[in-house]
Image 1 (cartoon, rainbow, N blue to C red):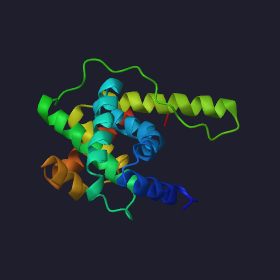
Image 2: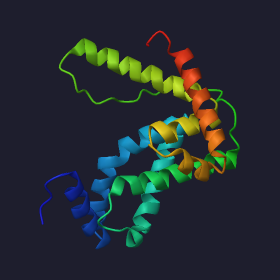
Image 3: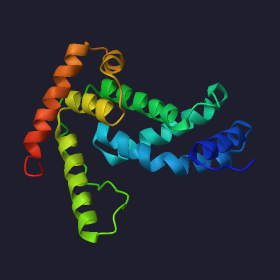
Length: 187
């Protein structure tokens, strides 16, 4: 069985991992780890916390492989585990204010341009956007990340955070207003 595209490769590795091949699961970790860290970092604001959450998510995922439906995509399943761990940590620590220190770790951006100047500008813009998102109050940041990065519906966000759809809409609107204000020189 040879994998031809990303989904086939994931399925191939998942079948092997479900059969006990830890190195196959390790390959899935390598494929998705950076992407997961980047998304959880946007929620949590600290790279070390994001890395810990992602590591825990992969461990939980490994032990839950028996319940994973092999024909479903792997990434949405593992990001849901990581996102739930992040939300649980936020609730546990009752972080409803702006982080006092922003982690200055740069988020790596894949180079898709042949023009070095465009690449540099894109990286700087992405860095500034990430720092602006991290500067949002956690209530606004969480809703913003779940909607824009995770592409969750307003209803799903409301259920996940146990708030009303109106509150989701209000927080998302306020988050966007604050981001526009912080990044007005880029717009």
